Image (tube, rainbow, N blue to C red; front, side, top):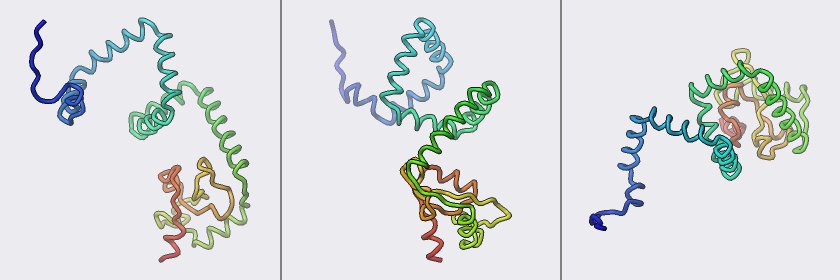
Length: 187
């Protein structure tokens, strides 16, 4: 057996270089249809094995999988895929939404705290009916109570953990802990 002498870096190190990764992505885009055909054939040969491997991977890499779903759902294609699923599977989606609503209520109850509608109106008035993030005012936008420390991260439902944000800013904030009240007080 004759081995060709390899001068330079080893294959493993080469596979970590930016040029190699760029070329691989280019090759994969060029051969995407062929690669997808191979994946489909492998799946069709033993779907149970593939499903089990996928399940084990998801269990062992839960945060990675969730981050991937979040990234995919932020794209236009992802949003269209979600919309199509909701339209074709209304009962499953309704059940999912209900389950998530129950989980959120349980978290709020577990974390404690309560804020009445009167307290909410007083808070909006104290900030002059203004979104603390973008500065827009009601009635141009509709304010909603945002949790400074999100409920999923252990934040309470008390007045001290709430701030008025418009729907758009609240959705952008997502599960980040950002206190816009201090920015407002500094002005």
